[in-house]
Image (cartoon, rainbow, N blue to C red; front, side, top):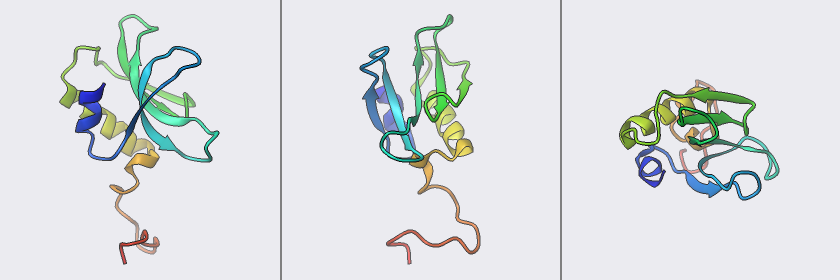
Length: 109
């Protein structure tokens, strides 16, 4: 998990779901307030075969990969980055090209 998180092209945090599974996940940011569920990437040990999954807003939308827990970290990181960009996860906002007319972020003027 840590090896994959380090290879992502945007800042993320590792966190654990201490209530339900205790599983570690990559936190890709929240779209709303502190109480809203984050976008995440993790290994789903509850399914067979065990695979990496990407969740939008805590499972509103789930994308299942073909990568198992022993997949190469670089391949998994590329897949997560692609899915996060596609879903416009908050962690990717600094990488997203701005459209004409969009306001520049603070410090980009």
